[in-house]
Amino acid sequence: MSTDTRTITVGIDGSRSSLDAADWAAREAQRRRLPLRLLHAGTEPAVPGGVFDIDDMDDIDDIDVPAGRTRAALDRAAIELSYAHPALDIIARRTATPAVPALLAAAVEAETLVLGSRGRTRSAGFPVGSVALGVAARADRPVVLVRAGELPEDERVPVVDGSPPSTAPYLPVVLGLDPDASADDLIGYAFDTAAVRSAPLHVVHRWTLPTSTLRPWRHRFPGTTVREHRVDGDPGPRLLEASARAGLLVVGRRTGRGPGRAARSLIRHADCPVAVVPHD
Image (cartoon, rainbow, N blue to C red; front, side, top):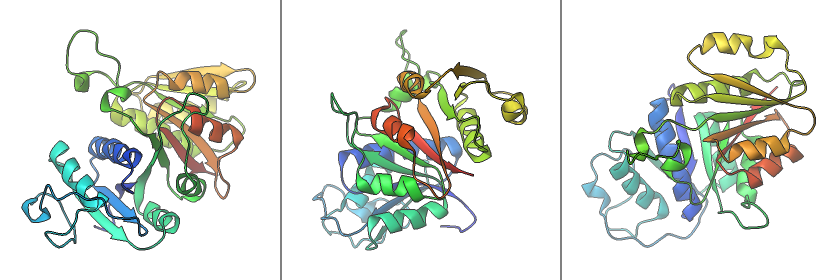
């Protein structure tokens, strides 16, 4: 991997949620025209495969696995994604370093780090494991948490005329913004993400947001439709409601701190992937 090129990096552990997160990461890499890096960290047991031989896959970059070995989760994910996204530059790596420090180190070179979470339960939302929470609380770059079962069509407007779901417009990106925070990194990430999807950006904030907060970003991204939603009180319920009609929910955390109580609740209960973005 070139040291001057960022990647979309996803953690692979063999779980269904990590594979769904990898598919989401592949789509994000295509949108941003970046390489996709698959990272298997730690010493999780291998997942039997044996259907494909890695030597037959000329379009997968940089997989250091001898032919004929039992396929690990990393290799199977790389093979499946190469078929689904043949034009994508895929870089697969494994390391024996424990998951949290390995993912934190990988995040330094990533545009975005993507991790999976288990599917939702009826009472408690979707549980987020200690690895995902630990990384989201400490990473230097945005971390997107993707629940198990997330499908490509879930990030687009529902199709009603029989046309292919992949041609439908993207659902809005929703940004939860604290007017008291200096959050240029958070706002910039939300605007940029909306722009690469040609999606509207919905900004939910408490009380009155100073005009100067969003003005420079509106000028920088003139093609992005921005809608503001003011909430007099706790914005959490409004953000949770908005996530049911969003392609991505973007929330912030102060650098050096983990996500606050409201952000953790949204991570557990949101109906769409959640991006946690560190900011000053």
